[in-house]
Image 1 (cartoon, one colour):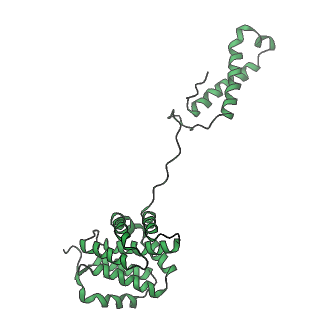
Image 2 (image 1 turned 60 degrees about the vertical axis):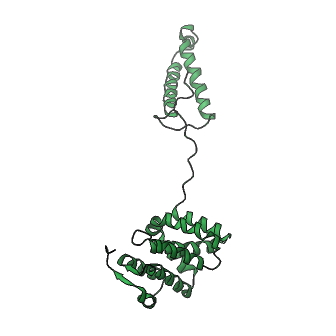
Image 3 (image 1 turned 180 degrees about the vertical axis):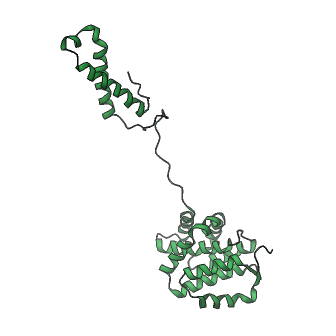
Length: 237
């Protein structure tokens, strides 16, 4: 008898043994098969047939020689940082318009990426992040804190992975004038602590290009904020 809890691989191996015995049994004459001394062969024959039927009609088992327990359904894939941000923005806006959700999430994600360009978010940048979120048309003030918290928690992943997707969304969905405003907000974020690092400059230039804006656009906006800036080399505090 093959135990029901035996892994599928072992059960199939055992079945093959039974089938081999069954084939061997067929070589005997009718008189030998009816002989009581050959009852073990008959038992194997019956067991092989029954086991074959059970395997055909029974539930599927994990084909593993190292596990005795069937695996349950795999758990849902966890949300990535962009999906977490979009879910929070969707709740804040109270809309099912996915384009609006993606545009607002992209703007928020870029703000967080600029704030995190030097691998930390200062208290001034955290405040400015909230100010810029509140400026977004239709963004409820009571949800600013919740979205800002997600941006702070997910800043590393948002800046490292999703910036190209954010800029592509804005380039596709927004006219040039609105993208100019986004870049202006990003420069304000970088300038909020009165100093801008080389990492922030590199990040802003790349975003400007990815947003489909020219170098002249970037230079004009940079000049607007130049009076506030104290240029700082990498490593300077």
